[in-house]
Image (cartoon, rainbow, N blue to C red; front, top):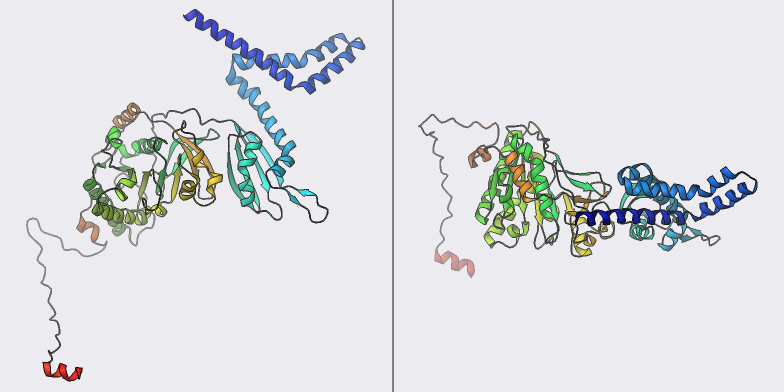
Amino acid sequence: MDALGTAWAVIRTVAGAVWHLVWWTLRSWRLLLACVVLGNVLLILDHHLAGYAVLWCVPAFCLLRAVWAVAHPLTYEAVLGGPIRRRGWRRHLRKRWSTIADRCGLATSDSDDGARVIPRLRRVRTSGNTLTFRVRARVGHTVDDVAAAAEAIATSVGAEAVETRRIGGGWLELTLTMRELLHVPALPVIPSAIETGAVTLGRTSDGSPWRLDLTARHTLVVGRSGSGKGSIFWGIAGNLAPASHAGMVQLWGVDLKGGVEVSVGAPMFSHVAMNEPDAVRLLGDLHRVIVHRQSLMRGLSRTFTPSPGDPVHVLMIDELAVLTAYASKDVVNEAATLLKLILTQGRAFGVMVVAFVQDPRKETVGMRDLFTQTVALRLASAAETRMVLGEGMASAAPAHHVATTMPGAGYVVGDDGHVERVRADYWADDFIRMVAATFPAPPAPPLPTRSEADSPAGDDVPAEAPGEPVETAPRPRTPRKRSPRRSTVERDAEVA
């Protein structure tokens, strides 16, 4: 069986080399024809060595490429294959740009002579698996018109996906993914760096690391069932685990699906709630942390700086809709009120919220606009994409087109409007348990009591002697002024 498998692998390798040889030779037919003509001229002039060299240079070069590609594909791609392919992308775009712009609806007619005017093409560059260029909108067009045609432009050049970014002054930068790198899932490595502001969750469409900034931001992750929200959940929690172990971060987890998700890596978390009453109590405790920090920072600083004794608090809520829409009415009202207070007050005091939800409608997530950044995984429709990422993003960041075979893939829109296509690494259960055992959270310090949270900094609070209550003077009561009761005769006189 081993011999048969080895023979089949050899046959496949040889067949691949032959296929590449034939295909690359035929694609170079213009150069091949020129070499045939020049070689025969040299042969007629009795320059036999030079003539045969020119005749066989193209097939010999293609044979060298084919053998190199199948023998050592990594070095071939880095040294020869990649540069040749990227040169072809640039050449194809420049050569066919007039036709592409016309067919995609970007050409306009000049009123004077009726000539077709196309948008200007500038700075065509390639890097890795991407083709980047800038387009200048013509008179009568806007940058939004060019952005609306981005998907058609990508299709015309055979790109897998497209990302757009406004440059200003009528310029739009388009980044085309010519070869898909996100279809293969990647596995994370054991985190070691102590990070409190940003975490590495996976990679972007060009293969660079995907860094999600959490500093003073609340993050909402939206995706259908099976879209890979767990990869982002544990990507954030796992990469913050070293900081949690060092006392720089405290992780708060809410999982109202019976604790199935959080319990896998529960040692990473300082506080966990797995039912409705505990979830409301946890939100109340976190809000007291915010109020207590307000009293400590008032008049001293507007920016929170974490320290081992004063950590960053990160609240992670798995399936937010269970807490804000599907629970009992009393729980929904109290939890929504506390969560809105945390979202509006927590950013400046080192308290961040990361929530995950399937249904992004206002009826389900009423505080959706209070989240400062959103990650859109696979969604159901273009309407949901606009709902999550904003108007006009259904074409620039089509999260509803993400394949079901790519869990963890989606779109992120930056503060400057730059769209990134990303995919989070896959966190297996055993890997989560290993990270949790390596970086368990230390015992959580006592939370501020209600009286400590409510008392403003600088107030003179009398100190209690051990075992002796503080005596306070009774507050005098001011008697209410009562109007004299009128008699029945007086009331009858007023009526008359």
